[in-house]
Length: 325
Ligand SMILES: [Zn+2]
Image (cartoon, rainbow, N blue to C red; front, side, top):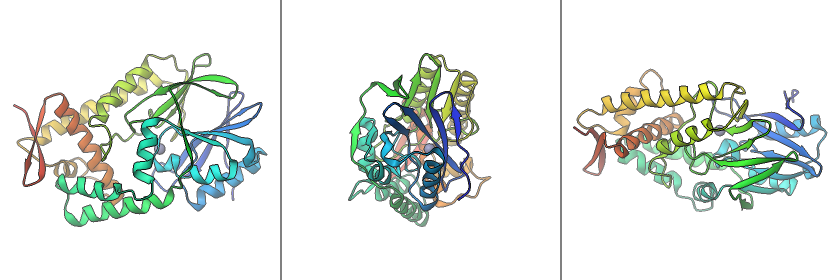
């Protein structure tokens, strides 16, 4: 195992790259020290590479698993939450998550989950060809193998103590319904997770069991962060962000452009799959990427339904979206 490039941020915070098998390459988890030991923010995806990285990280930091007393999950997605059970087993730590993502974690990763089938169903209903919908269902099912479930404690709104400082728990629904950021007011630091990323825009999607308007929630959550004084945002993927306000404006503009584009593409009635094909035609997508392409197109279409710009109608059990003129 090569040396892991751990960065120290301020006095007690360490930024830890843990490999993930997705284009972003790493999730950045954060280790925060206090008098009693360590807290962890997010844990990673459950595969061999991530486990090897953690073994190496603890060696480099000279920390034993038992010294980690708390693990906070910013949301339930597998690149953050996959190692939850594994990490809890080794550390004995309490594992915290918001109540919305507690429910989603159970729905998606719990025993007897039917989320993969429901996602397949959602894709078919939105015009996806049968064989692609089957592949999407299968890729979702195989994802569940990379999550081990811990015993979870619901994180109430309010504050947590990390590294002997108070951090405000900021609900930021959008990327997931129960996504949270942590804000340290005196130091103007934000643990941003997947709410604000530097190079790419966070994926905002509709899923079975999720909010009906995640994009609307997301834009409100971005505006909420704009009200805070942030000198440095520590995201879970990619580089740290100093110009948080500008980045938020860019992300809002991106979605505005996407909404205009999707409105135009809907014309007199098209399916989400059909529109996604136009949007992503320059890329050849695998089934995992198609799942996101369809779900992300849907979140924009449903936003436009909320604003009244688009109407939807059922034709033979397939949903068509059309401009509301
Ligand atoms: Zn992530």
